[in-house]
Amino acid sequence: MPTADELINPRTTDLLASAMAAAGVAPVRALRGCGALLEGLSFSRRVTTVKEAVLADLPDAYPAFAQVVRTALSRPDFTGWMTFPVNAAVAEHALASDAFEPGLDLLAALTPRLTAEMAVRPFLREDLHRALRPALAWTGHPDPHVRRLASEGTRPRLPWAPRLTALVTDPAPALPVLDALYRDPSEYVRRSVANHLNDISHDHPGTAVATAARWLAEPAPTTPALVRHGLRTLVKAGDRDALDLLGNDPDVRVRVVGPDVRTAHVHLGGDLVFDYEVTNTGPRTARLVIDYVVHYRKANGSLSPKVFKLTSRDLLPGERRSGVRRHPLRPLSTRRHHPGAHRVQLQINGRPYGSSAFTLHIPPEAAIG
Image (tube, rainbow, N blue to C red; front, side, top):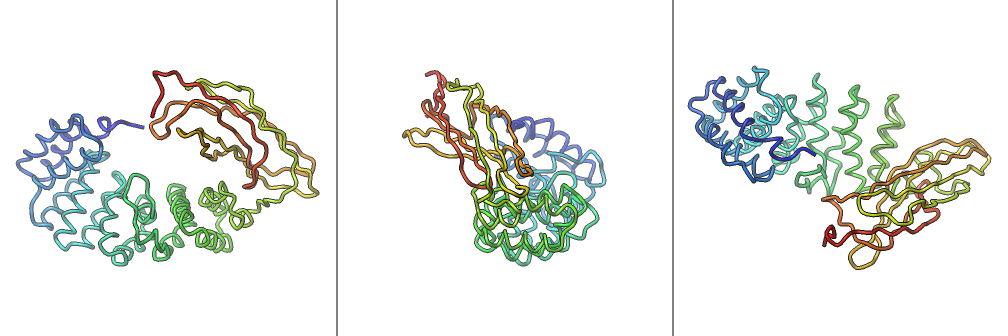
């Protein structure tokens, strides 16, 4: 992951100041000076600092403010991360100036330079149904970045963004956006649709499966792959309706050997290595989603499972699939590792098979928590 300084830094703000000056802003004192204020700040605080400089330097009246931004958009050098705080400034200024639809129109123009998915969310929180009308119109836009904005900006659980609680509670109002995009020719757009469907599955698994079933009834050639990605969390959780829709029978007849751990002792920074073997013992071709589960040791000694993708395969009757998996156990900011006994398990079509233990060793100087 890039650091905050790699994304928004004094060079970024200098380039943004030059772009605004070329668009007719004079002087650009706040933007020229804000680069010196960024050191040591988190990414979100950097965005806020530059956003406030944009609001200080650009005109107070929203129409004049928007005209400056549109003039900057005529310049190819107004692009990338410098536009991210501008997106935030557009949202704040438009909502404060009762320029709801014009603000969303400007964000749609900005999103090809760097996604405006974060900046549309204040509009959705302010008035969900009013904001969804332009979003639905974006689904017919010729630019895939704008079409993706319709799906990505309305995701209930967009990472690194506040949740849209109204759509977490009831995802139905945004479903017409997804219905318009699931057969989109752009993989970039379809990936967003799948991730949006996966967001829905966390809170409304029945709605996610029913939506996927509708799409599979009127598919494009790309729809099965989109649905598999969109239902991935339900498949990992062993949701029978999702598995049945995808043709992955949890009661499939298989013989499973493993996981057989090769590395009974793993030092932090090393790899867990295990073998596995799966044989179709049934009379028909078996469609298998083969995952594995690492049961991580917690500070209190209990185990917490985390499912990881291994492979998806169709096995003919009597056919066997075997392999070796290396799973890294590295220090992570998103996971606290604790020394002691862990377990690894296979999961086939949502059903657990086998279990093997291994011990994670962490030197005292590297222990966390």
